[in-house]
Image (cartoon, rainbow, N blue to C red; front, side, top):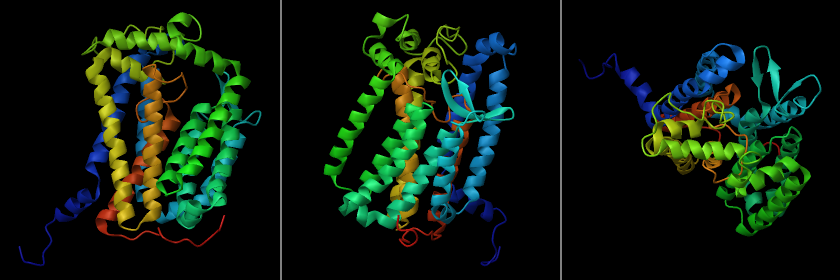
Length: 394
């Protein structure tokens, strides 16, 4: 082979080098674990509800295919497009959050109007809003980072946007999504270098709002009471938590084995969605629980690492976007697993990449695709529009 000749496999090798294989393999591992656990946790429920034991697992398999395609498409989209489309995505997210509240558009399930029916699938606008609001904030921080660091008004403006989105989410109601988005927002602003004193004021305001929200909705107070002493209310507000804790207790060190869960036999509600982690703990024990936690730690670490690399390369928008995605996935995973283990009050949030749910899986895969694109651009040395502070001053 001459000096100037390229080996036929070299282009393929370069393509693989551009991918973050640790991130990709971690995400795929969580998706496969989710597919296996949903198959195990949903068979009896599906058989009783729709007469087909494989109803949910087949649907989830279709969701996985669609989500992976969406993630692949997100990988092909330049980071500059996300930065330039921040205002558009913000508008889309707010319009969807309004649309879901309109009579005849939003679909009510279990007392909450969180879904828009699209043929045979349900779109959950709050899942899209999580990503779109993070994209908007990343662009805002690029344009106004100095103002955020020194000015109360610069600090407050993104909080007003968050307040509008939070009001719409609480109208559904979907307190869990509001908490995740709010925590991600605060985390991103903190990483931008805003003064700590402002976060103390913000924290007091948030705690006051949470207190008011609990008082306004009796079911939230019941959940809080059930969380503080679930065994005292094991047939009432603490029922889900008690059944989840029983699942963890039965799992012991190595679990009862795949498919042998007792709690999925109509004892633990939402066993294939919000409480799939508890079923995994029952069937695979402490070891399986720690493996899932470790995979999420690796996933969040890789996302933060990509953000740090982007910041060092002066790709500021890409850095903040990676930080925001890391916070979204990490916070939601922490809340879901914390609820399952009784560390946090019961809240309806899926476990990213694992739980049954098309909207959550779709957005999670898009997030992974964006992270892969940022990593690929950094590896190839491509420049992205990251330090442009022009444009709209708002």
